[in-house]
Length: 154
Image (tube, rainbow, N blue to C red; front, top):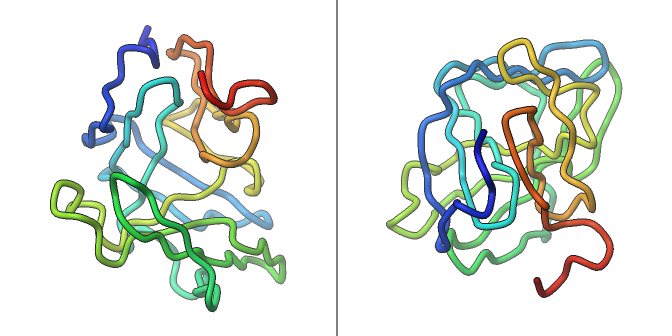
């Protein structure tokens, strides 16, 4: 078991040891054995898929929308489209992350709550509550987890 309270701040970046698959509209839009995990205190991991492991044509940049992470830099949001289904701003990427997180460049992180299913090996993950952080909850994690109502500031 991993406790999210053992994760560091600033966040750690490490290879994901499990196969990552993401489905939308009945289509597998990402399949990777070389994804990365970002581990930050109180949060389930966020999973970043290399751009080459994302199906061609499913991502499009959201114009004028982005956010700033105090650790990783400026994020660009992405619409995700598969089988005529469009999920607006359902993923993000760092085009020019700060040096410490350079390995994240152009990798894509998907909000599990906006996909049909996200998998780590054969385990279907649950989305982190609140849909702000985009964490992937798996059976091997212990909380409590930040993200739900009343968790801001703890």
